[in-house]
Image (cartoon, rainbow over all chains, first blue to last red; front, side):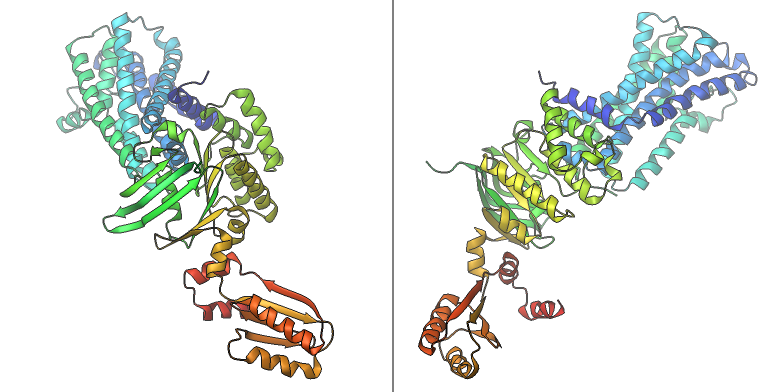
Length: 257
Length: 327
């Protein structure tokens, strides 16, 4: 029996573009950061500064939320490398719809994000134990990762449809990743001492909403702020999805530099 | 029963920007089992034509159907019956062998069939040595062989080949052309673009000449050569030196109504160019009988497809002469 085109493309995305060394670095780096940052900053950050009681308990949900960025970057890079090596063009003349290829990239990103979440949970086990989430709380975590994964993957794919230079793409991607990670609440909380301008910037960042939602779910506080965060993420997701779809429909799939 | 058309384009056009047409007013037809060569200079519109017919670009003018389906609205069903070897290199980041089997998987070829077909392609395209290597570690010609082999991993009714033999050595080219010819005899319809005219002459049932986005001619290579080949080179050798008889033959070839140009002599023969070589050969034969000289060899060289192509697109002959002298 022949698998549907979407599944064949997802399998191909994994088989073709998953370099084990790159994957180890991509997943190992955040895990490494959790261990090092968690250990070192625990001595610096006052427990009262975080709502979680310890810096490690504060950091882990943030690092889990960050996995949506990691998944998005993988999807964006997959798409860009496919463009660079003319596989986008080859797939577009194959037995697939363009929408199937876009969906395959997004789903590949989501699988990577979920694997990353699993790794974070395992790495954090010795420090905070196994999170005891209720079903709705688990749902919030998964929904946040899914929405964030779709947002970042469609954002980077949309960007990739409009560019014709690898140099430009990877420069913008690195800048966005840096901005998103360090101007979010993944590694540090917003306190009374945080400058107002910086607070405003932090709240322009989708990762801040994702970190807030996951953190609140870990702390058993699923309420209005979480739903608001999910709502904002959904809106952003819809926007970037529409942009990526438009980019796919109008892009010139020929080779790029 | 009329031949089955697998591709039909009428007044087809594509413009990359308003008023900037890459191709325009193209009328094309391809029958089942036929090999059509798209020839033309760089930028003539060959690749654009392939991209429109393979649904990568929507036509901006006219209509085109492939296997009866409009290329504007055709989806995976049509593309599932068409193979395309792009001009640009396209690979997955896996070994040569895995590129073949993974591509077959993408096309839904069953695993066992994919494995045996991969072995067939590895042998046919001489990829055994590189089986476990990644495509980017291969030479340009080896990568091209892999790309063509990969496209042949799945079943299809129409195959588009955009310069498939670019960068290949003579043996690899012959193997690929031979295989395509064999598949065409089995019913595969092929659209083939190339700059190597000799290949088109060997492979194609018909050729379509594109010049500045317009279709210049569509006919068999033989007809095309006859129409645009211009004068042919005639060489006649005699069984003995002509000596004093040469003057009489010179007079004959210089008479009004005789179309013999660029005449060159040697001790036992003459060569000249003529647009009607049959008439001139008959005339020289009659003269030889009368002069008591036997003809030992007559050679009338056909115009090559390249010469006909250059003649058709108006390549200045003076420049062609310079090239010949340079060689």
